[in-house]
Length: 95
Image (cartoon, rainbow, N blue to C red; front, side, top):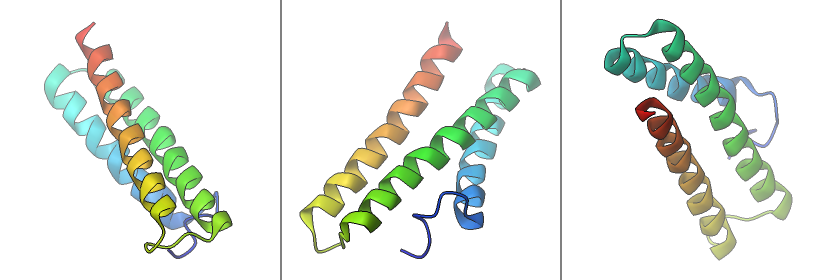
């Protein structure tokens, strides 16, 4: 797993940044509003970073591996939170 459990970690910042940047691009294409795209990009970056960090730090502290059922529950919950984030962004854009 590397050092994903470390809060401020370059790899985590970059990974979450890719998600944020791409969300911003999608919002810009759909809405043609740069300020809204930047806001969503930053929000996605921060939210994604924290979701991933909480999952990774929990897995690290509990010493779970891919052989553990709890690891997969944590992974699934992590993915659920990411999808809920995108649903919330979509709902906000539709208002």
